[in-house]
Image 1 (spheres, rainbow, N blue to C red):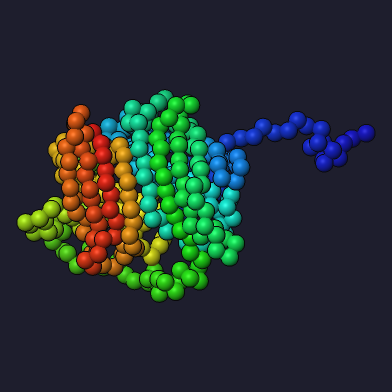
Image 2: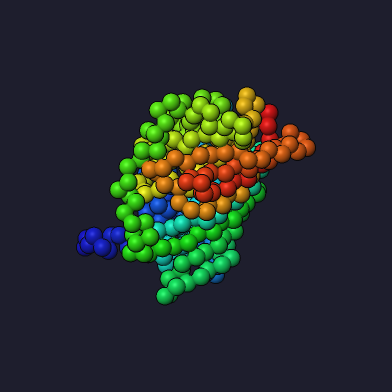
Length: 319
């Protein structure tokens, strides 16, 4: 007597659980290659255990010599974790808009060294604040603790707000249709050299020098990212993404320290308002503090239309 297909399936041993990334939609990425999370287990509705993996040779999130992961990859991983937990565990519907108001990270730079294989990690995520509106989570605060092979690699915090599509459309009033003309208003601008801002490729540079822009004051540069960049602009939007502003802060800090190299081992980033695509945004280093052990702390501020868009305080070693 032969088995039916269904009976044959039940007679076979269960297939092992294999590793894959979480759905890209749950971390607001268009490219699967840019999804760093692989799974999540809920502990008690507030604490979550996530897993993930960083590739050995990411095209952007790695050091100039290719030997270490970039600290900003930690920030991107925290960003993905907060959004994923909000959607999958806290019930925020897909299509809602997320606004990041703050994100911090502190890394052990020695633990960022790339090994002979991809970097697998565990990420403990705790919701320290959940505000609900009409039954849907509208504001969340998180604490993150990232471990590699059981050893601490990085920690940080994040705060995000959620805006329903109809409300967001009213607030933004069709900004997505605005042309990105800010950079074109300064034809004399010149992209900073990649090596000056801690980057390998010109396409990764997001700052331009404008003659006379920093005369008589703090050094400042025009924000001019490539809007077709496959990582910084992985998906289309109506404003400059927060991760682009973090990259701008890092590049400004590196430019001030050049030709010495600067590693943004820790950073605290506050976002005050949207950075619009169609108006000039200036990135200015407002404070440089030298500390013991070749450590430097710098404050970087982004300004648009005379108002602060973001503030970043970065700390790290200078070689």
